[in-house]
Amino acid sequence: MHQEQQSRPSTSQHPPVGALSPEAHDRNRVEVRRSARRSRTVSAYREGDRTIVLIPARMSHAEEQRWVAQMLEKLAAQESRRIPGDEALMIRARDLSAAYLGDRAHPTQVRWVTNQNSRWGSCTPSEGTIRLSHRLQGMPEYVLDYVLLHELAHLLVPDHGPAFWALLEAYPRTERARGYLEGVASAARLPHIPGARHADPGPDPAASCG
Image 1 (cartoon, helix red, strand yellow):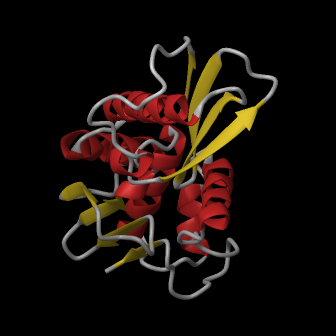
Image 2: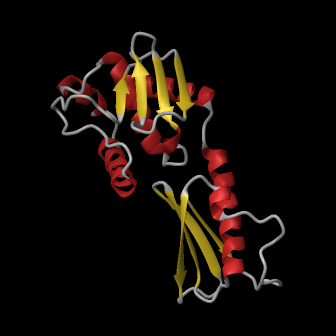
């Protein structure tokens, strides 16, 4: 997720009335990077749980505050258009089950939750329910699909043994999605995903069944 916009000279050296700090606009930590090579453009992108904002080195502190707030709002608006609701998650889960699991996994409920900071997703096989961490919101679609498929596979196989990983082999972006999540976890010290494939590593702190 990347936003870029051309800056224009500010008519005031003071923040606009009612301006809030970057932390008030966004739950993620903001890192501002100044560059002498930038003369007019401002850009921003997500990096794990952080938001990186790139600005020209000459920009004043007041302009920095104004542009950070503006870019955070643009990123949030763009992401909100891409984040599927619970109903869309259910449809997506059913499509993934049909495409990669022979339509054998039948979730009864799929929803976002905000209380899963130690795992990306979880499921309750006895009830057929799947819960996805809100931290996945805004991540690439193939990553979200992988976590959904991971939980769908857990509805069929509760552990992380060879039978479980065999179910995920049909999804062509499994390794790429795992690499993405590992990178995010390493950068932000977030939940790690399951260990080596074809072996049961024990409890899975990233995506488990309850």
